[in-house]
Every structure is written in C-alpha cells, then in structure tokens.
Length: 418
Image 1: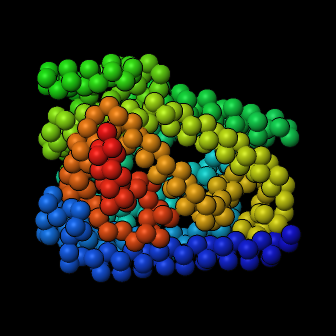
Image 2 (image 1 turned 180 degrees about the horizontal axis):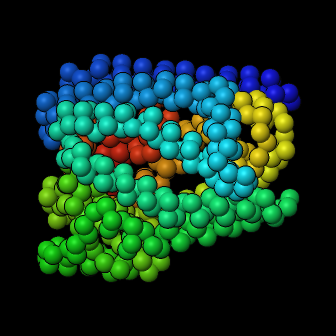
C-alpha cells in the first residue's frame, strides 16, 4: 500500500463514520420528537407527561450537542494527522531534547494536553449550560477546576511512568516488544483495579459507610443469600456534582466495594435498593466483569501485535501526515487512527453489553422481586431524564443497556412467570 492510498482510506473511513454518526443522530432526534406528545402506555401510571417531555427535550439537546462534537472531533483528528499537526508538534518537541524517550513522551503528552484544551469548551458547555438547564448539574466552577487539576496530577503520577516504560520497551526489546508491553499493560490495569477504590476514588468523592442499620442488614442478608463478599458498603456524595443517581461495584478481589450514590438512596425504597443491588450482583455472578476484562486484554494484545506490524511501514506514517518515523509517533498515530477503523463494530459491543444486562436483570428477578427492579428503573429513567422512546437503530448502535420499553416488559414477563 502506498501512503496516498492509506491517506485516502483513512479519510474515507473517517468521513463515512461522521456521516453514519450524523445519520444516527438525525434518526434519534426525529424519533424522540415524534413520540414527545404522549407517554408510552406501559409507563403512564408511573411517569407524567411533563417528565416524559423533559426527557425528550434533554435527549434531543444531548444529541444536538453530540452532533456538533462529532464534527469538531473529525476536524481535529484531520488537523492532527493529515493536516500535519502531529508532525509540527514532533518538530517542536525535538528542539527541546535530544533524548529519544523524552522527545517521544513530550510529543504524546503535548498532543493529549492540546486535545484536552481544545475540547474543554465543549465539556464546560455541557456541564454548566446543558446539564444545568435541565436541573442536573450541581458542580461549581471551582470544583470543576479542582477535579481537572487532580486528574492532571494523577495522570502525571501514574501515566508518565507507564508511558516511559512502554516507549523504553518498544525501543529495547526487539521484535517481541509488543508482548512485553502487553504484560506491563495488563499488570498496570490490574494494579489500578486494586488501588482505585481505596486511594484514587476518595480524592474526588467522600465515601462514608452506610449508616442505615435496617437497610444495611437487608443488604448484608442479600449478599449472604447470593454468596457475595465485599469489603464494605459505602455511600458516595454524588449529589455535590449531579442529581443523577447510580450504584456500582468497584475494586477487585478483597478490595471489592459496593457504592451507592446518595441521590439513589434518597429516591428508592428499600426493596428497590435491594433489587438494584441484586442486578449488580448478577454481573459478578455471571462473571461479566471478568469476561470484559479478559476480552479487553485479548483485544489489546491483538492491537499491539498489529502496531508491531506497522512500526516500520512508511505508508502508515506518511499516510497520516508524519515524516518522522519513531516508536512514539507510531504509538500515538495508531491509537488515534484505530477508532476510525473500528467504529462500525460498535453495535457488536453494544449487543454484547445488553446481553449482560438482561442476564443481570434475570438474576435480580430470581433473588428479589422483578416488580421492584422495574419500579426502580422507572424512577431512575425519570430522575435521569432517560428517554422512553429511543430510535431502535440508534439504540442498537449505541446503547449498552436495553431500551426502557423492552427492558421493563422483559422484567414484567419475568415477574409474572415466577
């Protein structure tokens, strides 16, 4: 393949992705708008018209905002690659250091920082305009900046040593460098799974032990019934940033924690909290987390092998607007271009995730009342302004969870069959 052919392939794929994304967005906008005037029959007893219309308006606002972001990201990627942006940054950082590892790390960090700065106005608009307009944002500008600074420091503490290690292995370990890099990547991710709950998450939120003794006893009984051991039950102050509610497991092995947003506990009944927890337990009992981790590691191994094949391909570098063929630039270009060629696989990943959600729902229905989980989900849909009428094609492409009508109907059938 020649460099011009690869440039044409890359640009064609990127533009195709952009058109598909905008087409999907148009479908979602049209479908949600056409169902805005009436609450679906299955939800009329639980959700009023005003809440349904708020969800429709919020969904459409997010989609319109996302469409602008898609166009901007396309232009930005073209500017960095075939537009010569990465090559310019490489030339500039090359003036600062003659050390190949320092220069490689500098150009990668420069691209990441510049990309973050250019995308920051979009993040600010979403947080302080779009989310605030619909009553969700509780974050102050001060907290936003503090979060950003903490994230930057954590990136320096954990990310820079990893980056230097990867670049050193790529330079020194010969043709099988990709196996060594993969081993380091796996080790790093497993380490982060262990330390995140106790050392990183508390830097951003307060985690207090669940104080409600009655609720704590109920949850512990459910955990015992399901044969699940956790290092603690915690309530997170999610309300200081948003009114959105959630619950999740974090950690790995003996560091597993169960975390509830304070907004979730304030909204749901004890039975509904049990049902939501049982759903999360279902993910662990079906080993969904381990399966996803294993799949991620397997795919990353394949991608690193592919990068090794491209490392000395002139057409790969030149086709993406780069003339300096270094390992750092190969790493950077590969992971910037990769999403362009894997985007159309998104529906497969979404379907795999929805399969897991159905399995977790079924597990929850076995150990709690399916009606309680359905009721909890309806409340969460309402509180998070999640549309009840997504476009089927859009949902099949993007949604990691089953659409509300399908999911609730499935739970109702499950409850009736018990």
